[in-house]
Length: 423
Image (cartoon, rainbow, N blue to C red; front, side, top):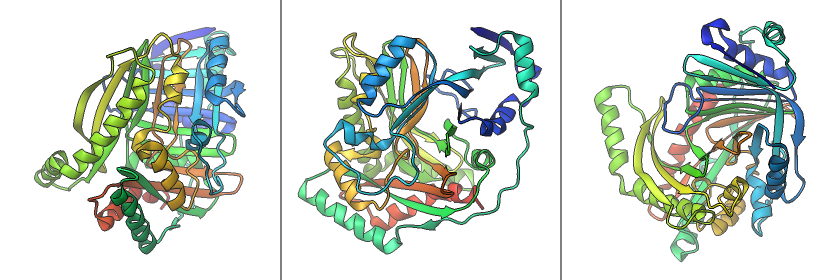
């Protein structure tokens, strides 16, 4: 295998060129932190292009992933579709998946490139030396942004229908069927997009620590996610669910006040702690006894568009379990379902008028050693190039004391940068 290391200034704008070249491949991905530093992130950005092999199970998805990685011990990049829930539990999805992402897909890339600090690293089975790599770089597309026709997405759920559905969910909350549900809505339209350009604009409008551009055949994800689903290093697992959102203000004093109100909000704290308990339970299923701990509760993190309440839960993976078991027993992530998880997912399907598909799922990477990092696919645009469908999905947590009008406004706040990226 070719392994190279060089300084960033040796190949200027390499990340940009990789992004715009990714259109040539059936499979490509760019994962980036946009300058946000956290305790666990390994890279400033990491990209994978081309597919030497593709894993696309038709059943027993997580077992197949385990067996595949154990047999090949290679880099894998790809996704988990929210509708995997139907295999994991006795559930179904009543709406058609218009995005058409496979339930699970991972690819072994022809080339992996990642940036860390002042250096860029390259790993490839197909390039043999630095001259090969230089020729590959010379063939990359220029880092320019083609013009994309402005597009306005229309809401599939009216405000009145939203309010009605929230009241229906609150009836279930009142009866004690659930304690919390993450209810989402969709905006959609049809157009021909240059997806990397849209992703670049979204990244400028809303830089995020778990951002991703992902191309899977005709399906494209443009993601500005602030949330980590699962991180693994050795036997250590970390999950960082988000529950609690507040808008940013134009002046510092007002912004600090909004941040303080979020930190002290009993409603937001109660939503957050319910999901923390759910994640603790999920991690405990594969954890060594006594190793599950809450490293941070109700942390407040600020991003360009919003403040978020983030908690951090960790565990030590038991030697009896594989990393695929940790994914299987915690997916879909509790922050996008509610609690109890199974009943919440049943009610989500009854009240939402679209199939979530990759939304509420995850994209990420698995290293040859079996370490991994996966995000939560939220704050995202989706593009199905086969049908020209463009979609944005947003949601919020519904609890017994929530105000339906305010929840709808929160959805519009989360959708704002997505819609602007297309305008």
